Length: 188
Image 1: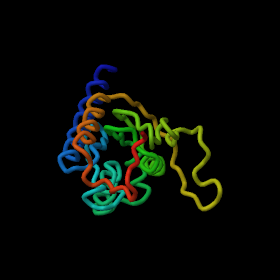
Image 2 (image 1 turned 135 degrees about the horizontal axis):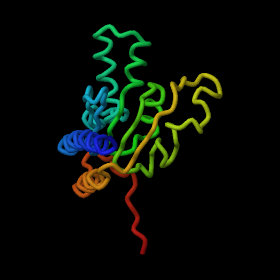
Image 3 (image 1 turned 180 degrees about the vertical axis):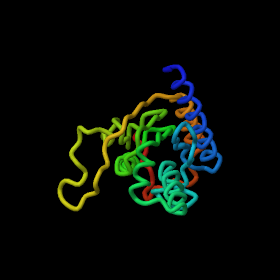
């Protein structure tokens, strides 16, 4: 049984890597994901921050928004939508950032499987652990957003492939990166 899960996990992660490659081909930071329910891919996403000029258009948010739109068209209630998300797993090439990890917590996703760690912005253990019950409730301090609960995370799945895509992206240079406002001073 464990071997079957590993094969399925690798299969879904390969689909996420394909989405990341599409992002790279579009001059986006190469992150891709798929959302799986009952062992079937029901949504996919890739980074589109440069394409849309919207910094929130991460792969996870693209897939989430697609599902919300489809489920709304199908007439699912808020409670039915919550139940569906609670049965879904996310496979993503890089650890979700703090924004995406918080969104996944609010939606009540079941589990996240990711490739490489996100040492600068990771929300599933690298910087914050928004997937865990060991953090303060996000609604504390008044006016916050209710979390549906914690979700499990497993990292390091096809991490070398994810890192390789990032290297390719940064080696080619990011043509969409902001230009420095001041000249860069080289130490002498």
